[in-house]
Image 1 (cartoon, rainbow, N blue to C red):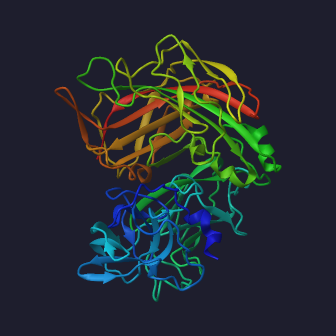
Image 2 (cartoon, one colour):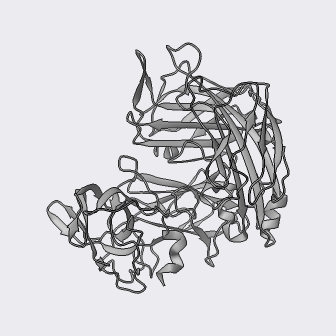
Image 3 (tube, one colour):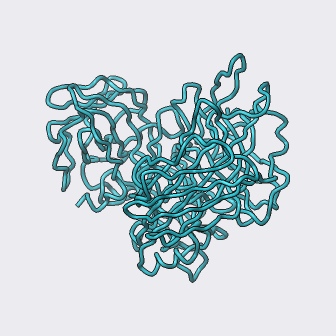
Length: 549
């Protein structure tokens, strides 16, 4: 019966290397948010579902529990959490390939700094540090990666997607884990009742108990699984509207929901275009190709010209969407909103879906020598290598770049040309690189210029922050009307970033954070056998290296 919630609890399939005892733990995270220790809301809440990644955590295959109560031992695997001298045994939900375990932390676990161990076949792992907190909410997402389309249903438990939208005034049910502890055993059917005082951010609107939050507690049957019943605020609309939960004073991961005007069941701002969205809504499958070129130019005081450790990039994805997988058709964020998470870019989250093979490589030709062709990270998803011995930068303004494919098992040959444009939109009011912004405060950015004919009259604003050693990374992306000339990034979005560290370039120390603005140019469409539609676009992002503190 627990497999009915596989969409909410499924983890990325991680193939184990040759396992050697004892078990090894590499990560412990909330099962919904996957927040890394050191980021906001990364603690493990009492009574929440959490995940353990590692090696030799159990057998390659194991029959997972199918009924209650949940066990504390499964397939010769047990877990132990110790906080302040008290040890508890978490309840095991499921295990995969000896590399992944999901479990529930008992509500009676003391809060504070502690450790967790995994014992398999009488071999015990080294103690791994964890922080137990009262509440730290993680939203489940349909790609099981902690970002993208949130696991939100309507009042009849139909999954919200771009072809089954919510409307202002509707009740949506958000699914996640980490609201807080309950009375009684977490191994059995949980009690129904509100837990804590969370706030749900829908678009830019906070929804609390006094303003549209109808219920926030356990699901009523599945242990550890929380549901939050909220009312969609008025004025909210878009295929990719952010949604996040503040519990215990901290924001976890940020997902998105699809909202349309009353009387419609599809949203209208998907990159795929309304015709392909309508085809999905009518029950058809859609094969879509998307190619994106990105140029970065971020200034650093003390370095002549511009500098950025990422350099120019190129991505291509060829994806089949079905009505059942429409939630994976995630491209950016709707106008007037921001999203954020583990990655710096959120323009194509279809990478979490099986792709279509378009060939072994996709050559790119242009006036400058590119680092190489698009090569597949896995079938159907391609990336241009980022670094060569010559230059980080290979995209040049006003020049044309041709991407070609000889064809693969699913997509035929094609050729399409994009002309790289540099938008006139530039940030203003930031006097130099190295500026400092507070993550606890709203950040209003201003710009000059811009082209109302590009990106449907929108600009893209983005940024990132990284710790000095790169172990903590977070980013955000916002879309705003170009004519507004200013936009406010909410503090609850910025709060998900780590504190900015520093890096070294020769004798210069600079911050490992950035902020930028740009516009996607008008896309060029292309056709190929096996595709219902395809397009190529580019974006040139300009900004500064900055501090988020």
